[in-house]
Amino acid sequence: MYKILLIPGDGIGLEVIPAAERLLQATGLALELSYADAGWETFQKTGNSVPEGTLERVKAADATLAGAFTSPSGSQKVPGFKGAIRHLRRTLDLFANLRPAKSRPIPGSLQNVDMLMVRENTQGLYVEQERRYGDVAIADAVITKGASERVARVALSEARRRRGELAVVHKANVLPLTTGLFLESAIGVSKDFPDVRVYDLIVDAAAMKLVRDPQSFDVLVTTNLFGDILSDLMAGLVGGLGLAPSANLGEHHAIFEPVHGSAPDIAGRGVANPAATFLTAAMMLNHLGEEEVARKIDQAVDQVLMEGPRTGDLGGKATTREFADAVIEALNHL
Ligand code: NAI
Ligand code: MG
Image (cartoon, rainbow, N blue to C red; front, side, top):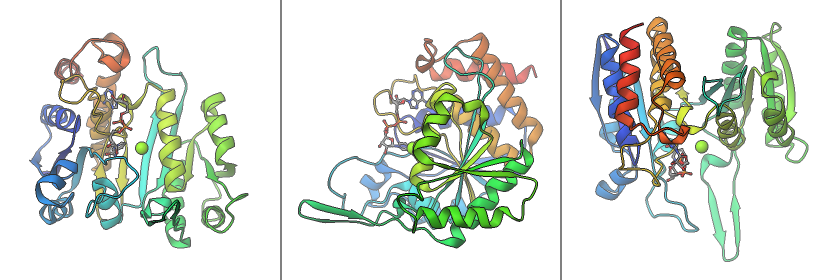
């Protein structure tokens, strides 16, 4: 029996997580599923984006599946507000963010792409230490040898299980002290993985190469902000945010979430693509050791992507529920 915590969060999270709950129930696995609150709406109601009770339940769960969390954009800080997912990642020390990008059987996806971004998840500019002095604003970027080494080890282990290649992405030519330390640390631990071919790429060159020659990549590892941006680019090459899954892994806890956000432009209409969350659920089950069921979910999603119905982001007309029904039906026949 696995204890799975579901946190819908905000916007389309409230649509894709209940769809994933139905999918998980359809797997036939012994799962104890329960819900908890976090996010912008929770902050507005309680003054806390991640209530203490939610944090305790994430810690007690075998794995957590989260939807999406709104963070308001603006030039001012909202007093007392912490971005829910970033707060969870840092508090629970979920230091590695795994974001696979794999070809899907749809017209909008490049073919023969199978790569994995491993993004450092707790540091860099995302420590959210910003100050403003009138018309001047300053942000700190924190990089430590320890955090860089441990995320590099995760990336090297993943590369070892895959095609054995790792690109370390950085900007050490301009920022040698911060991203240079990241590069040096990653190259340092790669000595323990002589079977992995490790090379480095400057982030702007990496962006171009990802667009021009994505088939050449296996695993990439980089700092928080670069990984955030490049992983969306990678998702765009293989069908977009509606299909991009991710895992936040720490030593003791794990939170799985689609790469996309709360999509306020389509939220509340029941048309969000739940595929990203389904593929995320598959990553979660894989992590729990249920490789067979995980593989079947992946296969069922691909089958429906190929045969339809498809959701609006992929040019179709299906609702979240119709797509989910089709995947559950396909899963039942595998
Ligand atoms: P977004 O990912 O929410 O949306 C970007 C575009 O992709 C929108 O046009 C949206 O409709 C579309 N899209 C995203 N997921 C989709 C899906 N499953 N099906 C169909 N279309 C989909 O990013 P945006 O608009 O930049 O941010 C909106 C909010 O989400 C912000 O408050 C932001 O802070 C938050 N956000 C949260 C993330 C998280 O919880 N990990 C990640 C990214 C953004
Ligand atoms: Mg992002």
